[in-house]
Image (cartoon, rainbow over all chains, first blue to last red; front, side, top):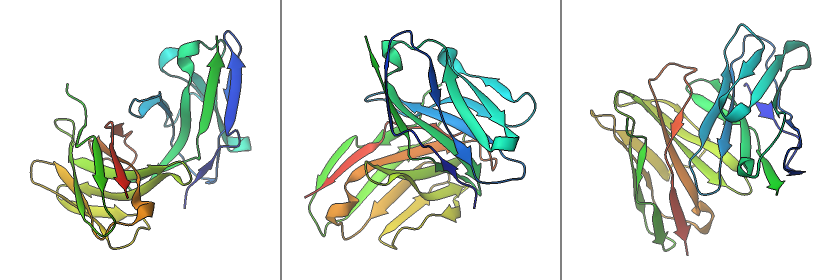
Length: 111
Length: 113
């Protein structure tokens, strides 16, 4: 079964620092991948998605992710974080009409 | 466009009771999925419905059940509640393709005492 893993459980940054969150997927064939974000007290929102084509995917709020097939990775990046980026971030892979989520990474941005 | 609506937002139940959670999907979405979110287990898939048919089910005991109505609204039922069922239950909707991104509701926070 397709799955994803996130190795960073909690990341603490200062404002304006760069962010990179790791996500590795298990499947070697065609794969679609998502990043979701859950702000405190809010619902899960789609940040960006990769289906095919350009491996560099841009999402909302200045986030981007790069699909690297040779490394089975789909890392999330943001060049300069803001306090409002404090949230939990989930990598996910769709298969069989369900999403399999990674364990999530809590990002705390200090002002 | 209205988002996914889940009711109620909060529930407190006692062990042994049963509970029904409700979800109204985004208009036009025919797929509804349910997930359980806990600090220890993260986001776990419960089941998915499309046009009133369950297409996939996660690894939860039979006490967890669901259904979908002809208007795509869905309900989830948990019988004989256990303390470990305390969690945030999330509903998500999508048009229904196998790799469609999901749109999530705010969830129902269930506390079992």
